[in-house]
Length: 137
Image (cartoon, rainbow, N blue to C red; front, side, top):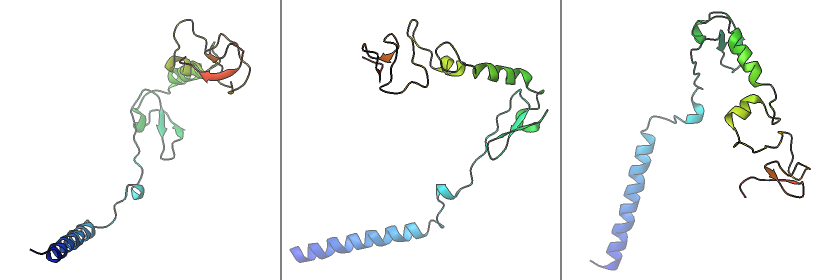
């Protein structure tokens, strides 16, 4: 087989492969793009009496079917309100619970900016009193 015949056979094989790919792509039945699908709403049943709407805001209601049909939810609201209070580190109590530092480690307050003044004993603060945010040195 000559070099020209091999070249023609190789090009013909590539053209055939591209044609088969185009046919497979067109036969997929249209464009079902993930961006075109409707958002999914997931409801989790619980003891509180609120229902989450499609916009994501809570709608108050007692005994709604979407929330498990619980009571008014005053205990849950009370716990949620307690967790939004500011703790001893300056962050909310929910943040302190999720990101509990090691015993004896002080964390910077949430409004601390890089380069700002801070207590040298706070994690992320340099010995000169400048907040650099370097916690792992």
